[in-house]
Amino acid sequence: MIRACAFVLSLFLSCLTLSGCSLSGMPKKSPINAEARKIAAAYGIGNFSRIDAIRYTCNIQIGDRHIQRHWIWEPEKNWVTYKGNSAKGEQTELTYSRSEKDRTAFNARVDNWFANDQHWFLFPFHLEWDGAEIISDGAHPLPIPPGYAGRLIVKYPWESAHHAGDIYEVYYGPDYMIQQWLYRKGGSEKPTRITTWEEHANAGPILVSLRHEGSLGIFRLWFSGVAVRLKGSSVWLPALIY
Image 1: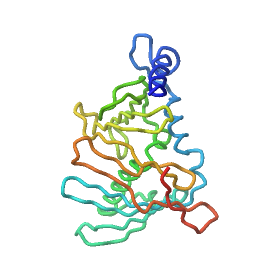
Image 2: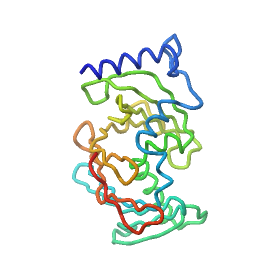
Image 3: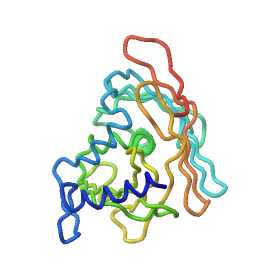
């Protein structure tokens, strides 16, 4: 409790000085957002270049509907392998390069799925990768009470390939671990999705969140079978709960 109060106080004081808020209380855009960099660093972005491949299964539960997609991503080559349902609902496997310009309709759909699932899986790194506008605006109540946390507002431009106009409110703790986020599709006024960030795990040299619970109990997203392979190795390292 003392630590949490100290964190809220420090965010308030930094808002009055260097964190990116003006003295009027209105957030001010920073070209290089220090808080976002600290979040990315806490999840191990400095170690990402050591990774040769990542594999994971994205599970999504929406009411009675269950979606499951298996992925292997080789970041340096930017190759993706997908295992899951085809357009006809049959099990299929597809490997492709994300740098390909010409794709079949199904290949394009798979790449949209990959962009979505990988965004959930590695979002802290996208704070640096995507070039979105990021604003720090101090401590705020968590969207799913109780508690307070620091908040970043992440705004994607309309020309973004996969997240056009989307806005994320990212709530993080004193350790710079994300606790919750709120998603506004296309910048909608009404939140599209609010979920927790839980079950942090070490996947080789990086940290990932394995479970996200919705605020109303209707939506749940979790990752299973997570493992990484480091450059120069043939061994897959399974994720270990943090």
